[in-house]
Image (cartoon, rainbow, N blue to C red; front, top):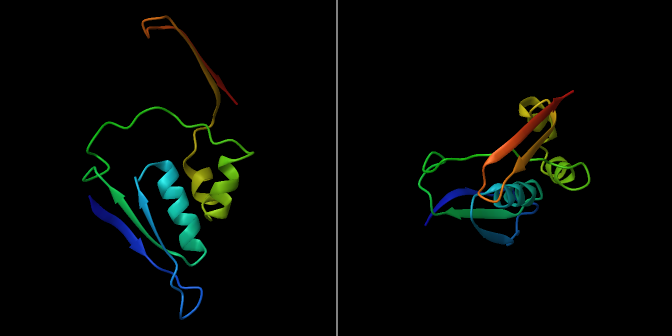
Length: 108
């Protein structure tokens, strides 16, 4: 694995805090950003060579009670609001074989 992110914003001249994160998924990247904002050196390791190495899919619901708090602490609320889907809800009914029987999208 290669380090894909290594950045330090020191809280003090003698800051020795360092964190290594394995995995550049949403959780790893959010944690890295929060640590970086708080002056902690972070290195992220990811097995995929690029973000295009495999298909990314699905939508993510970032709830007000947890995910949006994490984005605010990472200083990324504005960026999130700029790219978020304006869709308010999506529902699917799937059979035992994984076939979509019904999909409903509700827009604001």
